[in-house]
Image (cartoon, chains in turn red, yellow):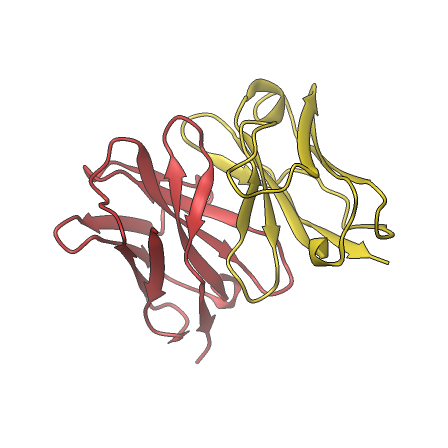
Length: 120
Length: 110
């Protein structure tokens, strides 16, 4: 059974960079059938797609966040990462990693989520 | 890209049916076969309930069904059960690998 687990600091200061890692277990990331993505949910709000990365390193970002987002992948560790720069309180959210089908676009496996609070 | 529009709440009694709508544009729902629905119990990971407008993943009860007409997709839950009470989100491809979500609908089982 595929499992995804987010990890990273739960508290980030304003203007700094948020960094999260998603570790995939129970299967290989090196597949042509899936992207690996990040989604977030601010408190009391809906889901927002941040972007996704292919095992080869190709990235696709939400246009509204593109200037601040960087994603990377390490297939040797079966991990992919998110960096969001110049954070503000508006970036406070639960951040989820998920697997996204290349041809179906379905998000079929999700991590449990990691709450990141932006505060001084 | 703008979020898809969902009603903030929906409700029904056990055994009844309820339909949740998700309205977008011709750039997302109207032009895409890749509309999905997710069930989200607070504090847990979202769960895929419907993909490609009408398809159900293995293990999802057939009480859950999806459809689309024009720029609006719908999720119908038949034979409501207490455990169906959750937040439901739609999503759609929006071109160029973009993905857009709806604002979410809180389903209450009365």
